[in-house]
Length: 190
Image 1 (tube, rainbow, N blue to C red):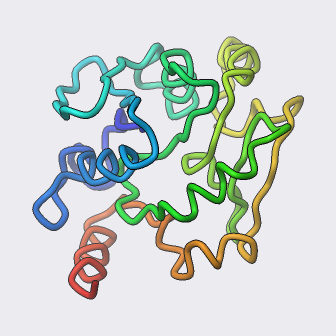
Image 2: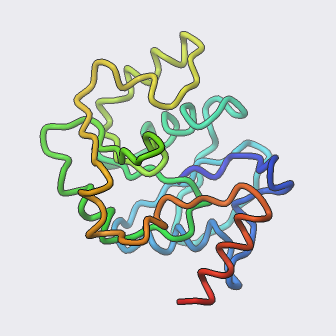
Image 3: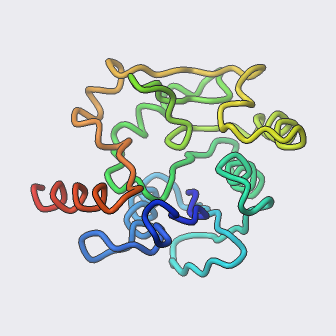
């Protein structure tokens, strides 16, 4: 899980933001623990997070964006495959993640392709991605999908995902006070 963003648009650290009495970080960590016993959380050097069921890893290149965070998490992973999600996605669907996991054979990346574009911070990455990740980081590229070029990537469209996440809320992330208010409304609807 990536938790090292500074939450500049929101005005505070998103990882420690509370939603329904639990931090965003804890909500996502609890969900992921149903799929793996090895939860890795990538943080900034100045960030203090304490969650019992997670390993905290400091970002190799802090303040350079999500691409470096993905590389840090993959490098620390004990398994070949990693689910990479942002800590500000409180409505992740376990059914959808299980479906994405089922698509990993013969792939290096499994990434949702929404109507608005790719969602690389709700995707699966194999450790085979690390050389490409390191290469684009050395080149100074920071766009998350910039390392996909020579890898085997499985793009998963909206129609394929709808059965596992009918509302599409898995991809909702909290960036603004308005997003937080919307998340609170959805939480109270459930």
